[in-house]
Image (tube, rainbow, N blue to C red; front, side, top):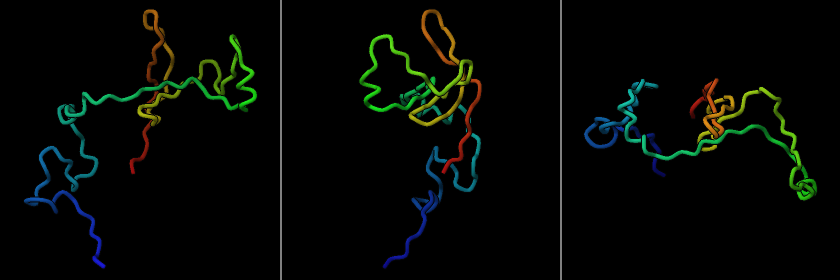
Length: 113
């Protein structure tokens, strides 16, 4: 059986990382806003979750117009903000003209990997 070997960008081509690639020898190298320009037009889904509730299907089927579903959050408690189904921040609900909006009060840092 052939031995498996981890490849990095230096293993490809002329030994130099491809233009615009992250240098594998410099972990967590900071990037400028210009470095991110290629991804600026990629759409992402942003969701704000006020709270959650669990119920049986029979309870769900009994809900009617005007029914109130109690959520697991208290008034004034931060809401969760997700980007592409990944928790990225917590925030508060705000009113922007005649619409609801969110303001981020805490950025959630997660370990990559």
